[in-house]
Length: 353
Ligand code: NAD
Ligand code: DAU
Image (cartoon, protein in one colour):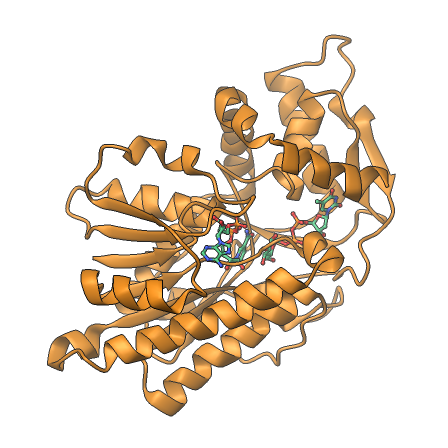
């Protein structure tokens, strides 16, 4: 049994689906609070799979987490649960502090107590895997070297500051208490089941709806894009073979400016689902007010994980983005399901007020 938190979100759910695609895989206990970003429809294919046990709960609920650890005795915890959207953290940071910092602290304490009851090999092999982000390293200039694991932390948004704080707690629980932790810091993910408040799914769905494609500032901010399936594979490798106490950077070797990403999506849609008036979807691109404190460039140096664990992404940006656009075209029912009232409220606040 492994315990996954936040397994109804974008990356967590992709991880759970990929993991259970292997008939020999351990069972999964999945704790998720089902915030606006949690979506059980993504996990619908597992409805009759007894290897997936879903618990609607909060990682900050000490009694619940303690009870579940005692009852299910997982060999590992993978912590995906978080508030993850930078723009939302600017409007309302409180939830980010609560889940990303206090929630992780609670999970660490429960894990430490549980781990201290394990014996011999079980104790040695236990892992607490914390899923984190490249944003903790701050912003790069065009000529800076890509982030290495040894870069200092320089978070700039309430989101990245809360993730940085959680990484520090995880590190401290290793050094002080010996809890066998691993931390992975990953770049921007994209792929199926991505909630359409983030750039790539937002652009695909707005394009198809005939709406503006909002590009912040000059659109020249750079992100390093990684297909979500590659991230999930990397997490499995680190869980299996990563060294306790270590951090591994995970990235796609795919630095792209936002405007280039948006233009690429438009080109693919022009080909796969041309507009009725035969014009390009690029006509819908609209430059809007920049994000406050917007980090200019992220880039990940993922050579440590390649050297130690032999992991490299399988998808290029071209193959991954095409698959992703096709997935959104093929799954209108899932898309309809996520376009809820609360999501519409967010769009109103972010883009029209
Ligand atoms: P997401 O917002 O899509 O999903 C987060 C999930 O966590 C949701 O299902 C939500 O219901 C759940 N959750 C939130 N608060 C909770 C709580 N208190 N208790 C239990 N569950 C809770 O996020 P994501 O994009 O899937 O990201 C997952 C993790 O990966 C996060 O820790 C994020 O910081 C990290 N990360 C994301 C990216 C990315 O590009 N999306 C890149 C690097 C790292
Ligand atoms: O780098 C990893 C991080 O990537 C994760 O830790 C976060 O959880 C995840 O949300 C993501 O953060 P970003 O802020 O980079 O992702 P987002 O999709 O919100 O934005 C990507 C870029 O596109 C960023 O430079 C802001 C810009 N953008 C975003 C939106 C939503 C726009 O230009 N227009 C938009 O409407």
